Length: 138
Image (cartoon, rainbow, N blue to C red):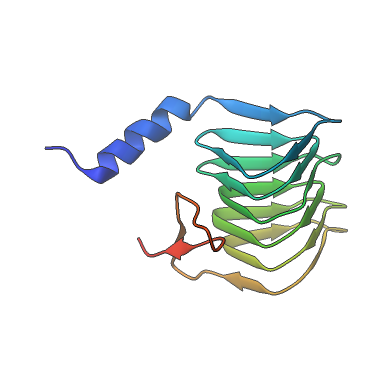
């Protein structure tokens, strides 16, 4: 009757229209975890764990690893990135770190320094662990 997958789908539906915003000029020190979308206009000095979509605006900066289902980067990331669905590198963004994603979209003038691994058939885990980002099989 009840399954873990239904619980995840219901939980995702609850947060589907929720967006958390890290405003320009704001600095967050520590890890950030969210069920709903995150928009980063400011700076996060820590890891970001999102069960949904992260958008880093041109003024946004993340100094840490990012784990999300979808990620659009207009700003800067200094850390490794793991994305379960689509990673989109927008013009003038810069990433220093390794990328792991199912699908990658890169616009002209976007840059990243690191290794890229695509189409692994794995999904991003929905929780963080002490030793960093973890991928798990479906």
